[in-house]
Length: 130
Image (cartoon, rainbow, N blue to C red; front, side, top):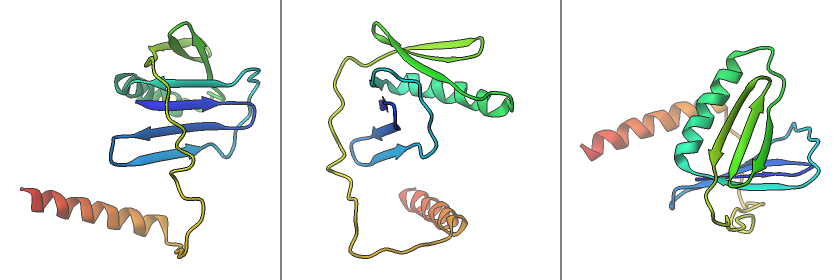
């Protein structure tokens, strides 16, 4: 599943598949959150949420989405559309200490070049598996 953490200053999404760990924090975020929200959305719910967000992306008038918790559900709402997903009843571990915040060596590369290299390496690894 995916862990969503919302507070007055940040919106963070964390996910892992057991081998890889990914965490992203929104750099542009405004909230009227009075209480912090920390929910674990199951994989199936993430797929439905992805479709929901893709529809919002197509709508140029969509300005914001509200996220809340009701009982054992996380609720996403935009204008007249509401989506509720049952939450996973478990605590997500604190992974902030696992992800390095500094590095001995660092390189800056073009996003397009990195995407091309990643695409080529995936294609090559898929060919090697066959």
